[in-house]
Image (cartoon, rainbow, N blue to C red; front, top):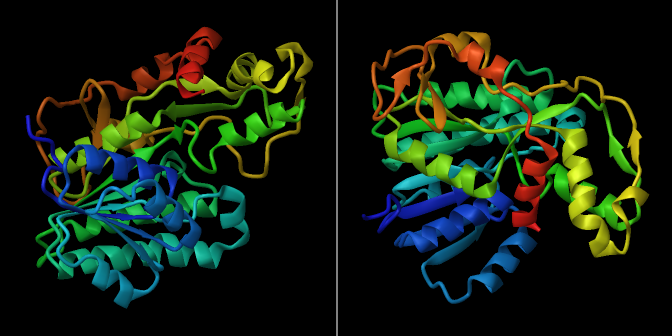
Length: 333
């Protein structure tokens, strides 16, 4: 069966990040004709170019998505854009709201307009569960990014199909919680935990890439795709990380203590994947939810049905056991 990316020209913004590099690997294995990796991280691009030097169909372009002229240039001859470039650290975004707006919203607008201008076939925007009922700058800009993408999908002159994917926490990506906790374990502890009741939805890199490709394959325009992913108590995750990693750094897991430091301002105990309104209107498949656009009703998707009681699904969801978390971590480490 021919893969979706086979013989396609691909642009990945934020391409030197963890998700960008994973998309690059997928595009290589699927036989993409051209993979254009765009990033403002000069060293990240250099490291990727060294790593994938045998692949002559990859272009590495340094630039900023806030620059309209640069963005217009990089979408030339592209079939599919995966828009992963963003400011993502909650604390940094809170302290730098204007820059976050410029990158996460205005940068997204630049990419969307350029895609329309150059007749790109599809654009997939990478969003986050922090866009659900946001209380911080990062989540708010990602929500507006989703809305912008949905609106662009129904622009009168658009030949481009726009859609979003909404991530949870992705295991062991750059800037995720796992590298920080591993460093604390390597130093002998303590591990810092904000609140023992803190829970988060998690996905692997493979889950994330499969969601992106699924969205690109079946999107009709304006939707947001959300993976059905496991819920994990952070205390259980950290305890399992001790079991997996402590011996690697010469410690017994019992030697690594956990220090409760209290929730940060505006931090939720649980990051939800859907709003109550979205739950009432969402479609679902075995693996993910599809939030249709508000302004144009869509009646069906392949292998999807209108969800009858999404709230019950989320009320019934159980957190993973430490044994289940341990199994996931052993595959990562």
